[in-house]
Length: 151
Image (cartoon, rainbow, N blue to C red; front, top):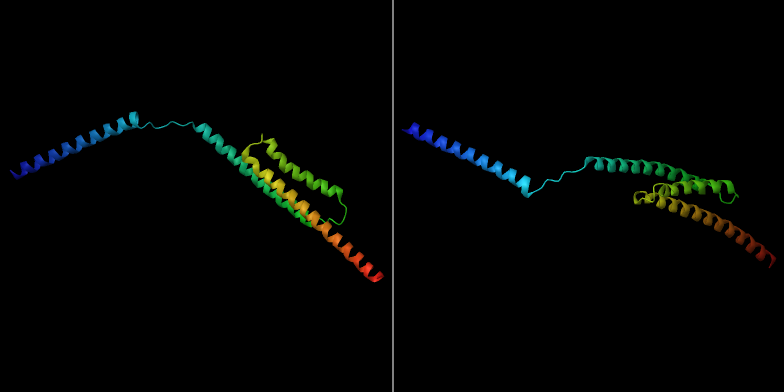
């Protein structure tokens, strides 16, 4: 008797479990197919955008190296000496960095080249002005000393 009740309870539980699993799978299938549409994406477009981003990162690394080289050259440059060729060479290197933006159809991903070129030009001109200000100050001091000696 007890064995028969246990057997009936087992089969009732098994029937309920199987019915529950079948209902849940049908509900899941209906929800995923008709209610919540799972979008299909074009992986080629995603892969091409990743490749473009990697190219931008490579360009950033090369611009960074060029930026540091030009900044060191500007820092070592003596502006008291008239060096037209060296100044033109530095300005040409800076314009090469700026031209990367135009070369890439003025894509906003390459705006960093404009910023880098502007910073380098600003640094170049500020070092040049600072050097001329120091030399002008020395000239003024010598002229002032001469005037004081004449008085």
